[in-house]
Image 1 (cartoon, rainbow, N blue to C red):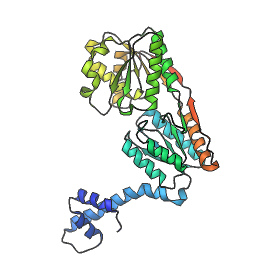
Image 2: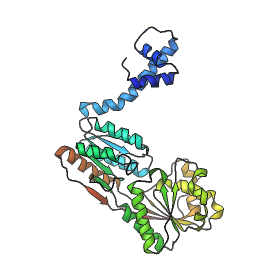
Image 3: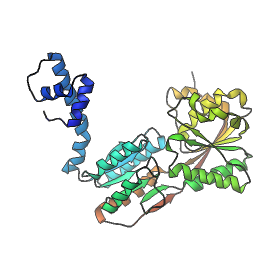
Image 4: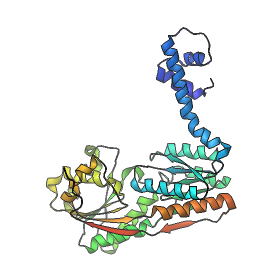
Length: 352
């Protein structure tokens, strides 16, 4: 049985034996070990070999010469899940298959996926970056090599790379202006902490800042980290800022329920309902759906700027395929417009 060297170590760790013992068993050499332990090691080898070869076999198969890679930062976000589906649908319509890779907002994993895509029969890459600058050297390398790639949603600014995204700056500016027109003056902007240095959040914050500055109002910002418990959130160190706010601009609707839980924890300090502005639709699945009374308790209205995942997908996929098939080196830098949705309290009722 052929096993990669790195796999021997993994098998040894999982089976709690030495690498030497694993090597001898897998090469059918005589060794003093129980039949149960021998079978355990062989089974682990099969499982790990299958795991490592599953992507590799797809990537290196010459029958998959019409394969593109899609690297997303987090498929738990409703918008990114929708965008992924739309990209796959469009690619299939154009005769291409899609290898979907989830970096989990990890720049190291993103780099590994980029290297995988470069060294394979993958014809092009659609990527939504974790960070503006983390892997910029590799993108420059891909560009110099002539590997077709297009950024979607989040992109790398100040470089001549292809991207299709939403006009986050204008969308955030318009949302903030509406909050102000409705009488809100103390408006807090809340970043999603795991993707701070991305164009999506930075452009939205810049749009918010411009609207606040034009109206003579002071910008305020805080951070939410979805991988930390509520007690460890920076906002808890100075909750006095929340006592004064009229409205909150959440960089992403993914943080809505989490933010509401923080509000509820300090509910005795909040004197009134607040307005919320954010990007993208959201949904609460069970058991989170049982907590939607928090919305009615703390929120007066929700202003949502909706992106169009289908439009983004069509433009990105079509341009990538034009690069692949027609060797089209024309650079696309596309900012798409958003649509606004206003939700007023009361919102959702949950029947027991």
